[in-house]
Image (cartoon, rainbow, N blue to C red):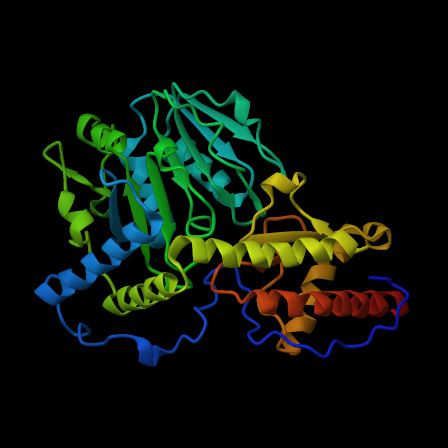
Length: 393
């Protein structure tokens, strides 16, 4: 985009302005009328309630191509609850390496050091836009990491860095990666996510996936701290396997479960996991093509191999913008977001509050690639509009 061009407002508009990184856009064509409501008002422990819980588990397993000996269960408190459940239940048996390069990874570090008060903790950190040195991770220890840094737009490129002969567990927060990126199940022992990201589902519930190695840890390790009920996955030293057959720890929202089933059926209709991956790759490809010609925007990810195709984060690199004060630089993306919301073009695309100033565009599978393509000229228009506002005072 040439900055001295006439700043004409684009004509083509995204069909949906929803580009929020969570909760994320509903699947194309979604309507509350599509949800099955027979189970509403019934007990989640009834035969029908359990059938619906089992259905969401079975459909999820099938789409993810989960190994037969891996378990998948629905747990309380979204992805945060699922991660906390894993940390509180499994850590302490050996030292742990904590990887952090954005706000959520940093939160897990804080929990492990300040809440669980583990002593043998190594923290491998990196600034927003980069990854820690993955070659320094010690897999004789437990390892906790996010697959995709939702607030930084940076992901691990693959699982090649994870040792096949690891002695510790790998605990992966994959909430903005799963259903959009290929996960190597043989490298992962605990995986957590929520429905409100790539599936566009509703909040309140998380999902936890356990490998046989994770189950063995649960049944052999007794944490040194009291365990809240919502974190307990064992009783008498044995796994409570009903959690992975639809018998939830606390009362779930069956409406949220029905919404998740609806999203999973849509995923099946578009080709399952490969169909979901295809859509997210197309969204990323449109952004990459635009960034390649932009003279004011660049990807926050320093290495293109680590750039997210879901939480796509961009920074402003126009020399004029970088010459502004820190407060003025922080104002730029906020004002761009305000303008685009007022035009009903893009909602909720200002960067995460703890991240460097920038924009964050969700590119998960529920977002139509044509909407990402239509959005990009509007970003140029909004940026030049804000630049003119500041220059003219």
